[in-house]
Length: 481
Image: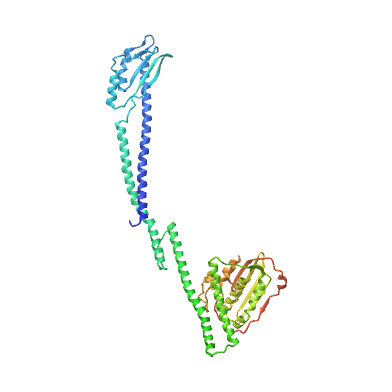
């Protein structure tokens, strides 16, 4: 097997099976020995009791111990392999008498039966008619495992050993099969990761199932798909930024060269045109700088308490001519909205939203800007009466470098991404939606602050900027810059 992990798993299963079999054999042997020792102890106790009972029967109340009856017990004692000694109440040895063949026969029986050495003697008091008549000392052989028992134990051990080997073999085969099933998707994941690392952005891990490895493969594929989308967006962004930079730079270069060659005079109108192109470049660079700072966690805000309505009114004043040129109507419905934020950054938010509207709202359309306080939050809403945003693109309008398919103007795809970044930096939220009666809208909320001292003076009724001429309407949806 080529996979080291699969080999280790297979060998691990086999080792576990073999160790389990050996452990079972050891436990069986220990249990067998313990039970057999208990059995021997019980047998010895029973034999001692039997010999004591037989010896007690050899006592005659009127005459005392009967030697003939004691000698008759000799063969039975010898067959038990026991050594006995009967002492009367006076301490004199009664039986066996000197020269008795009982001891010799018992020794021969122990050797023949391999009964083992004698155990420590057991002393049993002999009582007849309630009176102590003597003491019997009995020493029985310790005993050894009989042949049949030894054969049983050997047979059990062999069966356990052979069974353990068989189980280990089966466990090895099954372990290798299961290990391959486990390691195959891991190997596929590794190969997919290597291919992705070498530049194959379309590579995906072909893993099926519902286990943890399949979930890992699904997460990997989603990550790879996300990386592929990001790469495509970055490439598109690079091309868009190059285009955005090329156009104003080409205009600046051509007009400056014309002035140098004397073809054009440096008139106020020309200076204004050149200034507009430099502002366009400046806005693009500022947006890129904002996103870069956010990526490097170096984003800083100079917070002051200000009225968002006044800020919107100030920014909107600079857009009057652009709205007029596009034939758009800008309605301002502003009420005091105190926030604590960076004036320049908040102005950039409003500028991007209004610039987005100028670029994508159809000619002759209406853009409405509303500010107000709702509980503990300040709300800024920018809506229009255009065709709206395609539903499939709504979740992506704040993604950086995203440009909708219906966009009719070139753009870098970072305008609304900058809006979202700046709003989140202020602790607010932003969302995009389509109105039921048509048109798209953006809603921004900030935590409300204590109103500034000039809030009362800034409260004015809703106003509107008159719209310019109304050329033929367009159908482009509202999308980000």
